[in-house]
Image (tube, rainbow, N blue to C red; front, top):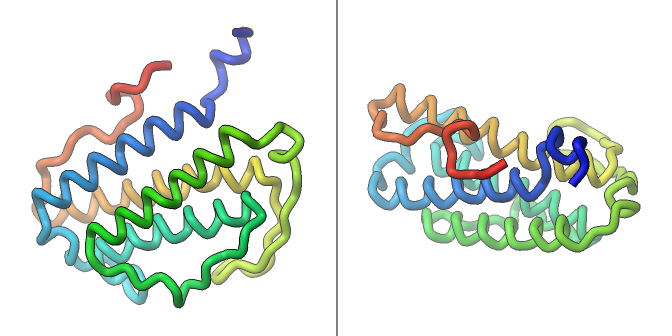
Length: 168
């Protein structure tokens, strides 16, 4: 391992950390089912459950792009129960792991161009798209944790990488 390997936050680390968080949230929601319906924003993200659905649907759609697959239309996401939403998340995560563990470096450098729902046309390398998936999820899980704390659900764990069981 070179010195540079110690300086980089690798995909393996991000996969381990975010997958652990995802499973902890699943277990937490089982113990706090009323939190699933807590108001959050509007539209598809009107509730906490809607935000979780958004996180997982985005991860699946972008992973499908990374794998050069047909991208699932938003209208085809009909999961409503917590279990169905987390199953979608597990499916998307498995495909992301498949891509990140098998893609050669040259594939990560390949640029994709596509139309997004809210940001218009985007061109980015597969490396940037994969990296954004982690940041997108981490950002929204942080919002979820904050809103739930504000609504009285303070019995959460520390969500910081520093305090996680992930080794680096």
